[in-house]
Length: 202
Image (tube, rainbow, N blue to C red; front, side, top):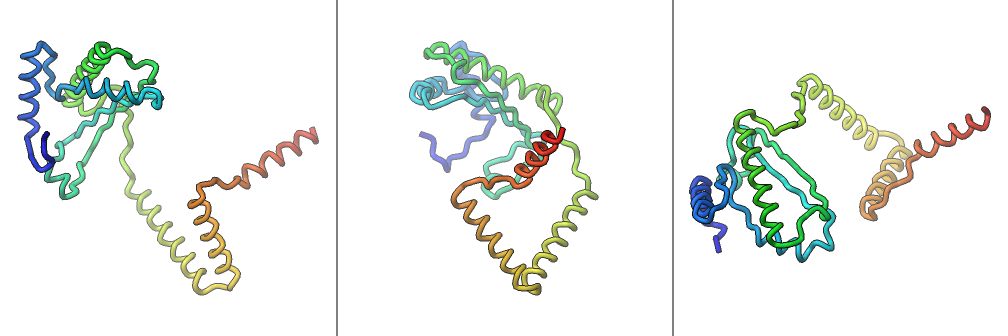
């Protein structure tokens, strides 16, 4: 078994995987390694009753794929693209041969997606996020600092009633988080009351 401290370059692994695929008449993949078909079939066979879906996730790095040293020192990649596909468990194949065929087809699709990503810089039909506005960031930061300062001042230098209010609020939020319950929304309760009252008047 491969030890965690052993390091192999991605290029060496890809060449080894491509050689194995060519020798066994399997599709030669450029961007991904050959999948572990028996491992997936075993997992599905054991866990099928407790699963509702299988998630096919493909990750691509825009500028440079992080190395082992980058991960070790916590260097974050500049731009990461993630493609997620949800497959209901009832649509997953049942036999080992069908699972093998399905997984090989899925990895061929992954390989094509990654090749397309290398050419265009994004996955097909990918939603993109707009650039963050420096002005909006500065306004949000100023508001957070200002509100934090106001509440800190009121907590330590205001009347006893505000301190009691802050203490009860902290106790309430702590208990709600610990007991994992959602409080009944006051506004959601008041609005139907007004709506029902208007309906009766009509």
